[in-house]
Image (tube, rainbow, N blue to C red; front, side):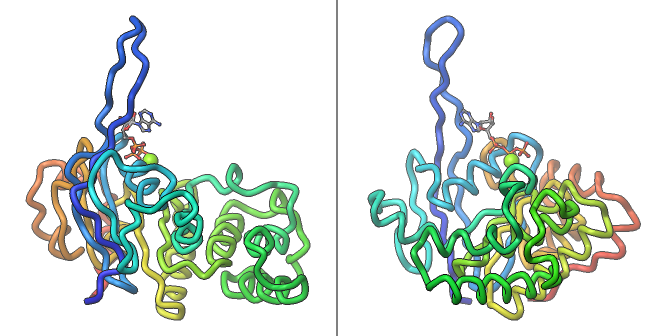
Length: 269
Ligand SMILES: Nc1ncnc2c1ncn2[C@@H]1O[C@H](COP(=O)(O)OP(=O)(O)OP(=O)(O)O)[C@@H](O)[C@H]1O
Ligand SMILES: [Mg+2]
């Protein structure tokens, strides 16, 4: 399969001022390598602090890795300068856990979804509005709610808005960093289904970050498990779930609710 994203031996160290004045370094990522096939989903699972969000920021060109190489859409993005990065960034969009913090509560649904197009100077006003309305439709927000303010939507609807906004610039890769974690189970399932439907329709590629192995098994074709900055296990979702090799993988699988585990059969590639 054609690989949209190739990550090779990424390392990320953060300098941190120590109380006694000496500089201390934190290694957030160490020797991380993997790739994601175009149009497929890789779930990144790991305990808190294992480096998942740091990896997401490096891939989205919002942090520079200390060393290593990232190739996106056949283009090595780790060597690009700031001006060149501005052209790549719209193609890799991030959706975070907490839409209340990433969306301006005073903006209407329509404004939120058309703003990235305005900032990029794409399309005129009428075209922007038409495109934003179409996107709202795609994520299941009714047209009569287009002028409702973000703060007046439910958590699940706000996450739908965040997804519509992320899709407005037609990204190739969507990184979802714990994007469903704050939602109720039934809302999680609805949005997971929406993500799969959008993937089928638009050919999107997902990096789906989660603590939740059940959701990873449901959504992803492949699963990578992180521990202390390293990818310690990676493979087809059913293999990682069925025959985990690492202690941390077994621990994360044991933490998933049994009923959910049986309900979520892994996806075929
Ligand atoms: N800006 C930063 N400066 C210094 N250290 C950082 C910074 N960002 C992350 N770290 C450190 O890097 C490590 C990995 O953090 P990261 O946020 O990537 O973990 P995570 O897997 O996303 O955790 P969680 O599941 O809790 O979101 C942690 O030790 C963290 O303290
Ligand atoms: Mg995180």
